[in-house]
Image (cartoon, rainbow, N blue to C red; front, side):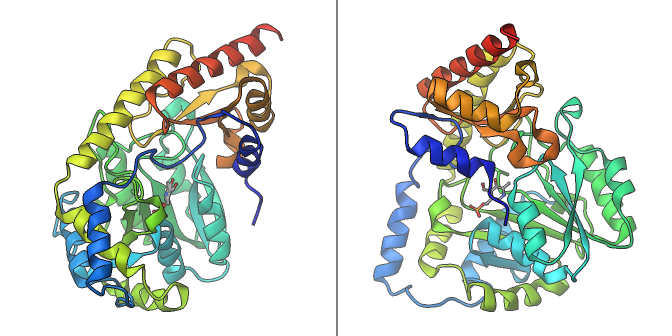
Amino acid sequence: MPRSAIREIMALASARPNVIHLEVGEPDFSTPTHIIDAAFDAARAGWTKYSPNAGLPLLRDLVAQHAARNGRGAPPTADQVVITTGAIGALYSSLMAVIDSGDEVLIPDPGWPNYEAIVHLAGAKPVRYQQQAARSFLPDADEIAGLITSRTKALLINTPGNPSGAVFPPDLMARIGEIVARSGIYLVSDEVYEDIVFDSAHVSAIADAPPDRVFIVSGFSKSYAMTGWRLGWLICPPSLSSIVAGLQEPITSCASTIAQKAGEAALAQDQKCVVELRETFKRRRDIVVEVFGNTGLLPATPQGAFYALIDIRSTGQRSLQFAKGFLISHNTAVVPGITFGPRCDDYIRVAFTTSDQELREGLQRLRAHIEGLARSR
Ligand code: PLP
């Protein structure tokens, strides 16, 4: 497993006092109280044993209902749902279910670094497709179609996207659905940020892709500020759900039963907390636009998730060198773009996972640093 550049920055940042953290990829709020209470109640009521491999039946049912809001055709059934240890567990399970050694999997560049690692771990070869700034960090469906060979087993997509905040529009998702239907590959759609979309609506791959070919990955980490509970889900093609459920036994047996009871409360009760979380991130996205909007350094306004990519080409520095220098000179941590793929070295990622005030201060430092380096060249 390659050492991630983000770990280098985090190690440097942890050794310094009063750093502004714009590198952290998780909500800065606590899990809503009613969800925590449900976990306490469940533990006291004896929900402290293993659950079935595929998860608790009520939770699977709630996830199926939740996913039905994203679809157009027949809604997924609870049988298609497997509860996993985080969305990462869902990603790994989907690939382990369909990959044979030597297969190729198409992954985004830039994209979340764990995709490359999971594909390697599953014994396959990652092949990157581009999500260029010039296309607002969205993929080009024709390029994807052109990369599919007889060795390609799956296409992995991510919307809303980490690290750019790009959100796939309906026509792009429809094109991807057609490509998957025509080529017969599997589509793994990571939608873990599905509830954090600002100016449009989330478009799930469940709406367009053939049901026997699509895996939907999502979970509780981002929508309900539950990263530490390690709870996610996978919606499988109907014929593969029992294989994916069986795979849980050697991987983790099942997701934490107490966390699953908390997950039931999260999905079944009032969704006000999700609305508040989305509004908070939208307000902070607007702060990013306020500080960077007219500088030419923000190539695309983030449409979802809680990240933005900032262009550092004018500084003449590579992204790791830039992130280290910026941390040392301005006590503010950002993630070097190279973490997300070879074509992202011209950018650094900021996360809006700190207070509005700290975010504004950190972004102003970042802007001043980039403009200062550009002037001094
Ligand atoms: N997918 C993406 C794109 C992510 O950014 C993350 C976490 O940062 C995950 C999946 C993992 O989510 P979980 O914490 O539910 O495993």
